[in-house]
Length: 373
Image 1 (tube, rainbow, N blue to C red):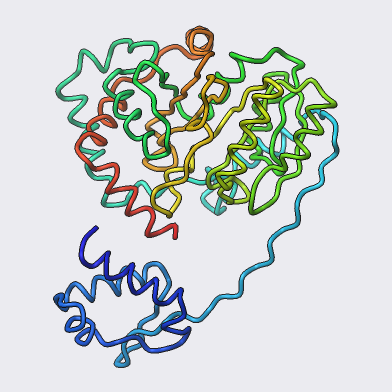
Image 2: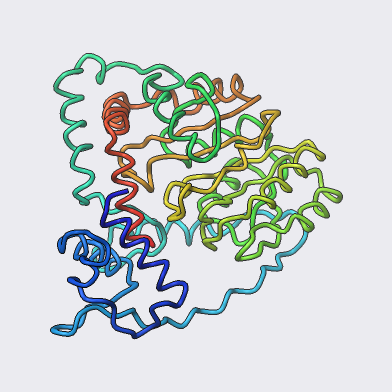
């Protein structure tokens, strides 16, 4: 952490503790410089960071003030879906929404994409060009079925931040998280099987289940603590559920981070009823807290949690790089990948590998935190 980041963190803590009240003027740049023994430019950078985080506001010729407290919207009530398996519908509406992404007169709110013009992504542009210039034979040929080993090694290191200890041999690369999740379902389920999901659930996941011929049972979900474990247990007693899809970190669409105790509780429940947890961690890296939240997979000891993620939300969707830690289903998943999608694109894998190895990825994600906090 740099000096200005350390100072910004200290000031943010003082604001949160009420030492600086909302609307109150903050110390001048010069006085903070003297108090903390840092340069004026360091204080200015700290104030700029807090301004980007919308914690303070500048006023011309007056200095910086603590931002007014914003009224918090009410937390939505826990969902109460019907407690039986249902068939998924509304594909026509989803297709219309997807087509609307390309209508320049419409601002699309149906999906989230990162800003691919950020300066912190310039290294990936260079790496893509370099990969094609210096590895032409490799990028025009077939890739390993599991994906390039050197990239799997880098992803295994990244997964340590979420508490998951894996090796390159435990991972399979896919063309995005959507692909990872669909391959996971293909590896475990048969048409007609029942899958439990959070309610509400991401529409893309629901349509995936429909396309695979699976039935869905929605489980009431608290907007702050996640899926109701009690309701899930009742459903498991009543229906032959094959697995449950969970987005425990930075949930889409509710936004919660599931407390660790509840993550462990849902894993214990899965062990008792011998079901699979399909864990979607696509947003986990974007959590602003440090260290980032742990995955359910990090507590898994018998390979029943299939962890899926990708660089779609952190780097760029056009890379088409996702991955899965399939646990006990590794061999079946590799077979499903061969049958359904084949190998990945070598050029983007080479570029992403160097982007991570040279430290650009973590710097880029830290920059993303500034804009998402």
